[in-house]
Length: 159
Image (cartoon, rainbow, N blue to C red):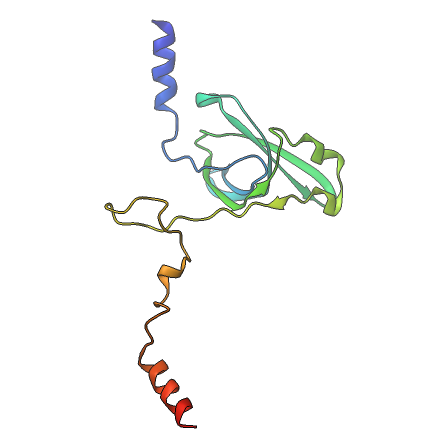
């Protein structure tokens, strides 16, 4: 019974809209900071090097370089102090923890970018995966010339 009460209490403090990001992604974390009676938002941008925990205690670590000094910050994912997490770029990695970046300096800390295809918004009757954004079906049909093309082809044939 006590486990059930703990689970229910944890569910109430969990966020419902958590953005999807992975290890190696470059993110911008907007953190609410209270100074006296004023509240402001400070952005911490860097590479996600670790995720750990589960449920309400899930955390992620972001690393960035400031004044040639590495700065790491661990954020609770469901904290009310985090107002927004924006994925700037996706990195291609093959590790669950990127602690090896701590020993690297300069350009050696860069990760290859993972370019994900975005699926186009499709009507309900079409199956997802049939067409991707930027496919030839989005453009004009190749076999049917438009009016401007017809005029150009006629003038060329007269020459």
